[in-house]
Image (tube, rainbow over all chains, first blue to last red; front, side, top):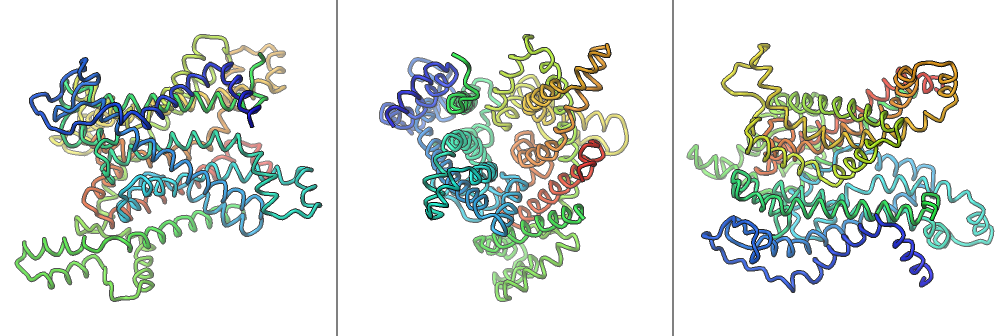
Amino acid sequence: MRAFLSDFLSALRGNRRALAGGLILAGYLLMALIGPELIPLDPTMRYAERFRPPSLAHPLGTDYAGRDVLAQIVHGSRDVLAIAVLTALFTTSLAVGIGALAGYSGGMVDAFLMLLTNIQLTVPAVPVYLLIGSVFQVRDPIGFAALISLWMWGPLARAVRSQILSLKEREFVEAARVLGLGTAHILLRELFPNLTPFVVIHFIRIMRDAITASVGLIFLGLAPFSPTNWGTMLNLAVFQTGAIYIPNALHYVVAPMAVIVLFQLGAIFFAHGLDEILNPRLRAPA
Amino acid sequence: MRWIRRVLLAALTIWLVASITFVVVEQAPGDIFYLMAQEIAQTRGVSIEVAYAQVRSMVGYDPTRPLLDRYLEWLGELLRGNLGFSYFYRISVNQILFQALPWTVFVLSISLLLSFGIGALLGLVIAVRRRSWLDPLITSYASLTDATPDYLTALLLLILFALNLKWFPSKGAYDSSLTPGFNLPFILSVFHHAALPILAYTLENIGAWALAMKGSAISVLGEDFITFARARGLPERRILTHYVGRNAILPMVTGLALAFGGMFGGSVLIETVFHYPGIGWFFKFALDHRDYGMMRGLLILTTAAIVLANLITDFVYPLLDPRIRMED
């Protein structure tokens, strides 16, 4: 494990894009973990100071009620990242479970699971989230992550299935079967380790998609359970306070947008770089 | 035989989605009907019990009847083309949908053709000229648009071109002072209003199409028939359009239906941002008014539209690509 880590870190150092992406993601993680302790959130409304431009006291300006925008971004990051990580955990487990079961069992089980997967891939996610989310009234990050995971596992499940299909014909799996090892052992100890790099990259992609989806849904007005979620900030700016019509308030709209795009870029670079590191065939000759 | 299987699978998909949405909406908190009853009781001056009975018969919601009965009745209506009842407007969802769907399909099909056409052209160019400045530019552009959710692109366009520069209107599908019909001012107004939504989808998707086309074209460039065409001394331009382009674009056609589906889902956010009265806008409207009946109808219609688009692609693709026809 330690050898793997040091090997991984040196490969990361050699890959500038992966390094940049990794640093950006680490920055967001720090912001979510310790940011709220460092920058206090003051909810007092001071309408005389509304929509102040960025300054030393307020690096990202103030909102419609004179409150610091930076503090809201920092406090919101905890909520946004919690949903992203939880969704990635739920979705990955669901997708690996469904994909592995379908690929390994074959037959009717496979046909049924692939039908479900096709339906998931066909029916667009946003309307599904809105219908289910408003009927069941999601109220917290865990519920929200569960909602998003419900309609996001398709691509990974399909990819895992085809990986399992090709892996299960290899000699080492046949050897394990001849040795009389059980299905659980073959799946967990022989097949899954081969999927790890590939699942890690999907994990990052799912985090990205989860942020796009959750911020978008909260922006639309579904489940506004956190006042500082970036989606809530956008919702307030666009639908509630008329900030988009006020030229002076541009910073209030752009701040949540910018943190979302920067996170996505970091994740894209990191995933792309990881792909190059973990997949030796893509690794550029040193 | 293969076609029958495809059509059955499409029908099965729509039926499953419809049934799941039926069950989900059944779980909806019942107080929505009570709220409606309260409103009716106030406006018509009847007692709350009478109003509640009225609402239940109007919506066709009678909790005393067994679930299976209600499901079968609802399914029968669905088969006859009735997508259900809007709790808010108290009319069949069909009237709303058939007014809204053309706008969404109009914007989506133009955006799809534009982004596909421009993207494929750019992809072809960078596949052939690998060392030009255009390649890194398009790759960065694709990463940037991949990183920007479509609703943020839409929001930026709205703020910049509609609210600040005022080049384009910020709501509606046409100028309400004009009479809808086949006259030039109306058609111009329709395009003027659709321009920003179309631009949002197109900007968002060009990069992905360009990268897909680049990959596809590079693999075609390695084929022997390209070397042979060059050896025959055919002009480079003709090789690019007739030999590389035509072969490289075919595998991407199957992606069109998939992209159409993705854009359909995204229309809820985009149409809300631009106040564009397509089915996405009505979905947001239904969300705000907790109109589960309308949401259910919209979701079934959206699914049907995408399944149909997939089916059409499946039928058309073999006509375009003789290699697939041979394999059948």
